[in-house]
Picture 1: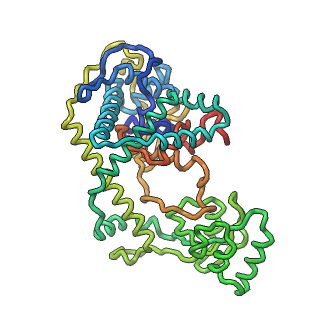
Picture 2: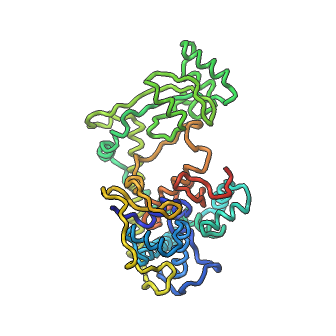
Picture 3: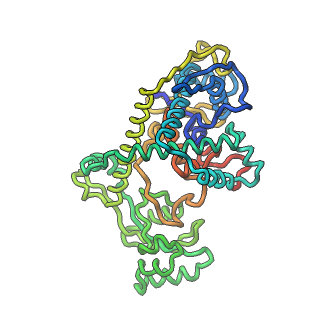
Length: 445
């Protein structure tokens, strides 16, 4: 069974999604932080990382994972090939990386815009129906609002650093795109491209009238979309929504599209966005052998190219971060005795939950063992998703997708130093975000 990194294990239960910088960004040393053992865990160019700060981060993690009982914690460590020492090592390294990001930002003159921080806080607070519910959500993830603001600021600095460092990243060549496309082409087989005309839910009579004219050949679909659709973005392109495999379309839309062949027009399809008339404009059939990019629709090529470019930029950032580590004066002190998360691992043995070598052990919100699909846990996917038209994108007007994206990004970073995106920072803190992005208790529905 493959071992999950500590950060990825936590992402499976949503904790990574509530920290703007990854796994330990949500625990800061404050006057309210309990004194456990005192002392200094590490220094980074002379800046101290308190041992109690590391301890509090791990204690917060245990609370989030419902592993406050010693035996539950010890068993989880054993099942995931961890020890208290290795957990401390990952958390300390995460704080070291965060400090390097702070110092790197200062050296580059990069700062977070206070107005942008305010906007993120107000956006997230808006998902809760009262100040007390917002305060409870912050408390549930071990933060004050000031600490949350600090996390956002660090996330924004880190994001700007990644953009600056990634400016010189090489653009993918056509040959690289083709090689990558060979991996993905089978997953695109059967993909459907579509256009739609969106009406308000109260406009059923008009929608039916337009549909009847389209079916009678009296009205061109693209012309009708330009004239009648409430989705102004796609209407400007004759109702074009794009390919379903590159979008996150609402269920009602995809169900109706699945029944259409190229050129077919649906009946009236009702979703939470209103009433759709859908036309399937193209169907992709994957070639047996992909030898040229011309065999792929342009949108697929662009998606893969964007994914590769993002990877190149991330690699440039991590190269920069590694250079900062190598150049920095970093001292990590020995683990002290008497830590509250310490357990004697001789008392716990690993419980195998998968025998085929493909599963990964994690826990659910109640601390019970679960097995994650390896690809899902590793954050692998088909590449960057293209923006889609208003009225067909699942969760386009809510917090769900952005928080889930934050969880994926934090999960992809085993050391907690990767910057979160704009939307990711805006969607903290949200308990259970990785598990469907449900808001914390008290959040407005």
